[in-house]
Amino acid sequence: MPNFYGQTHRRPTWRRRDRNEGFRIVAVKPGDVRRLSRKAGEVKIPKVGWVRFRWSRPALQAKSFRVTRDAAGRWHVAFAVIPQPIPAPGTGAVVGVDRGVTVSAALSTGELLVVPPLRETEKKRLLRLQRRLARARRGSKRRGKTKAAIARLKAREGDRRKDWVEKTSTDLARRFDVIAVEDLKISAMTRSAKGTVEAPGRNVRQKAGLNQGILTNGWGRLVTRVQDKAPDRVRMIDPRYTSQTCNACGHIARESRKSQALFLCVACKHRDHADVNAAKNLRDTPQGIAVAARGGLLLGGPVNREPQRDLLLVG
Image 1 (cartoon, helix red, strand yellow):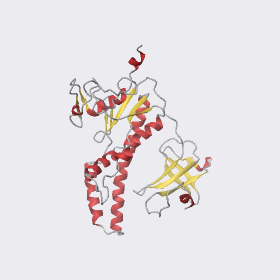
Image 2 (tube, helix red, strand yellow):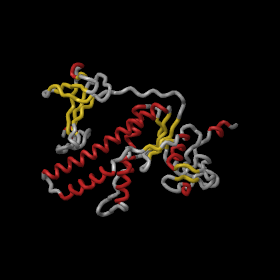
Image 3 (cartoon, one colour):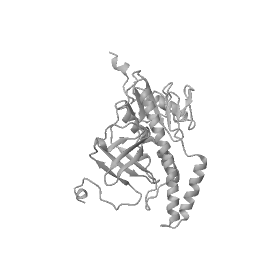
Image 4 (spheres, helix red, strand yellow):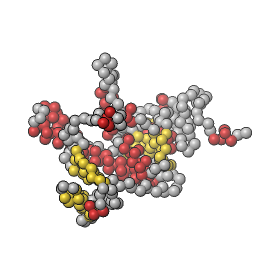
């Protein structure tokens, strides 16, 4: 409460069961963590003793660690270690990454990367469990078991997404010197459209589905992990008109985006995957090859686009 009244923290809330379960240990000594085998290790927890854990990756000397329990009932131990960034290949390669709902990440090289979703059998089971949860009485053991089963399926989906993000971000950091991504305000894009009783929102169910698709594809986590592994090599690009601009001729037209997957330029008939075309525009923008226009007339070209290097050299 003193922190709240000092305006440095938010108001304290009541602790909820199965929410933020865990604790943090500081001042870890070198002998408090030891390795038993290739896949097993032990950590010394005060008042508990030695606890075994799965040694999933090489760990340096950590000064603190945190023990947590997720909604699926699994216990984790995370050591606070700052990893070294991945060195750039030094080839001068630049890649554009366009994030979407149907295609999680489209690269300017033509690669289409998708987060592995739940299998059809898992989706059907999740739907059955959600219906069972809606019929269960609050506080009953049956409701608790159903919530635990749903949490295990959700944890499985989250683990696959995290694994995909780690592998994709590592691959991008190793293959390319510069990674260009859209500067998206994801928190604003995924805000609820429900509104209030006095001013209810419109198309609430459609917006909720879009929000779920954005969060399921891990847009924010992907960029965060790329920035962690390749610092100072990520370029945040203004996303305006990148999906409507032809990468071949630079013509801007909304009609060129025929569908979610097809881009067919109305001026030069250039044909490409819509997400790959947008990724190429992101790739070319920071290098000065093509600049994403900020409006302007379609016939005479945009009148308020960024200055070109060749024009600045004239005279």
